[in-house]
Image 1 (cartoon, rainbow, N blue to C red):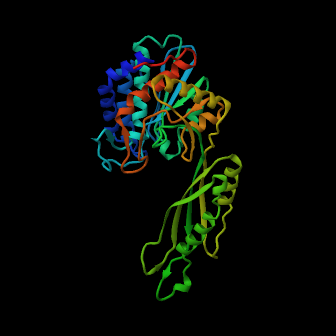
Image 2 (image 1 turned 90 degrees about the vertical axis):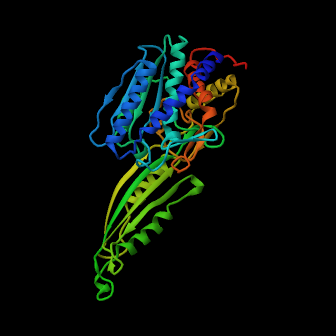
Image 3 (image 1 turned 30 degrees about the vertical axis):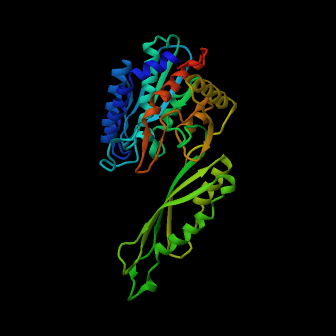
Length: 383
């Protein structure tokens, strides 16, 4: 492992430069043009660093998805990552301060993608990829629940001997993610009847009053003892202060640890009924990602990662987390999946989102070691 780490350390400035370049290509999920422009930057990095081109899956509504393949046969490592972000253009600035790199999507998860590219480049440069096949699946809509890429992932992920998800590590500890909650998204549109709030309020049916009652019902679905959360993250309605509101809308996020809870929550939300006569409810959405459970296969990958980390001079643990990722999909397909192999840092979906620059090389070396660990002996790295 020492020669791999040394190679990456020698190119540390270039790796950081590539991360900055990809982060600078801002890519809010809903902006197809911006996401596709970012995808072009990502393609140029793959071409420059690995000499490979993308197989492009073109999308109408969302950004195009990109598949990169290196090697024709042998044990296959599939590396998964997304290049869309939750940030609108111009919301965050790219800056480097006190050993940290801040910017939109730098932690979630553009640094992880670049680290993985350089992990493979190091193996390529050191002639360690003979008899191995590497597949990168880079999608453009993960932050929206992967509406257009879940089927694409299901089509291209099978055949992998291991799936490495280069989402960020657990904040604070650098731990890998061995289990994740399943996720769901729902929208509820409430239609009422408008009326003048002073002259004839009795003729109105308030969508906002209905919304408040439905929020209480939704909140009651929480079951923290079972790891289930139901969060009303968006609530709005009405238009004028002197009008009985005739419309309102709720946006709901759900998290579950098992399929039974997913079914319970889905049934409860879809069976909601109006409290007031004259109210109409329109419910859309559903469970987006199945829970990712720890399995004997994923435990084996964790053990491998811990062995690689030890060879590189640091320790690793595995944790269960509440957030979902595309690793949920590959795990549900029965593929050995390990998540959280990307950058370290803090502030996912927060304005202080950043990575720890000093950890870029060790985390890239970790991915390289995982590619080797399936078939080769991992030897300690003596400094």
